[in-house]
Image 1 (cartoon, rainbow, N blue to C red):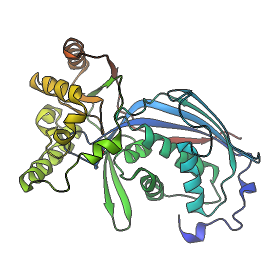
Image 2 (cartoon, rainbow, N blue to C red):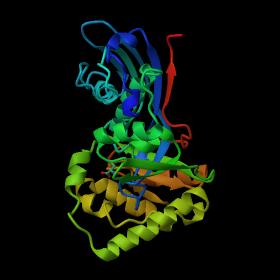
Image 3 (cartoon, rainbow, N blue to C red):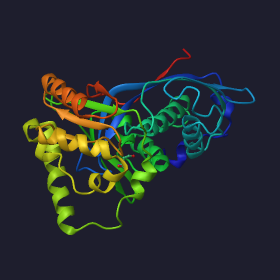
Image 4 (spheres, protein in one colour):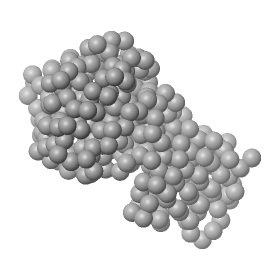
Length: 319
Ligand code: HSE
């Protein structure tokens, strides 16, 4: 999105009547040692239709997850992300008619806020097609500005396994294809966890040996996920975040310990409280589900999910 690409007149009339269909995957960030860096896109989606209108106000409806809970005005996260993207493009934000059909659970560590932000960013980019064009780096930068860190928005945008890092010129990513011998299982509890609370539990600094521990495990984890799934149990060890946050999600912590003791590569999904098991095959998933059913004191929903390889899609729907 170079300055030269800015819309000549900044008028919203050029996009009125345009309509896009957007689909964004859930994501699991951190994956154990890869704090704020690694993320995996999962085949569970929020679907949205967005039309630019010349009405006086936005018209928003939400079905499925978040229905009756999320705001239906300009403070809706998808609309805020659209407004931010239009502002970055130098084009006035139009009113929108937005219909969201959501499946990604909120507040569970499955990237729902990152998905809403990515939905808004790519909906805006779709509506602006041919007026202002965005590169992949532009999309990641705009989404990261809103999310604060790139590890959920990168896999939501691009799919697969992503390594995301921040440079003086903005966030960057590398997408990798996950080995077919990796079968993710997400275990979702009934209660939520606030990412802000989880982040407030992180210390200002960590021991040098813990940093070295995580450098070795996160390097190994990339190899394990793309080439050597048999290394996943060792490769998902972490000393940078899960231990500090355990007090805020004690059952998550206890179940992960039990799963790992039984040989399953289990980690906190994102900031929690869900658990991600990077199982090697469907029978390992079934064993992990049985273990959690027996050991848990509250209800946990098992979601055996494929890796999403495509990332977010946006399709013009106005013909
Ligand atoms: N890396 C982030 C965290 C993911 O663990 O705080 C959740 O947004």
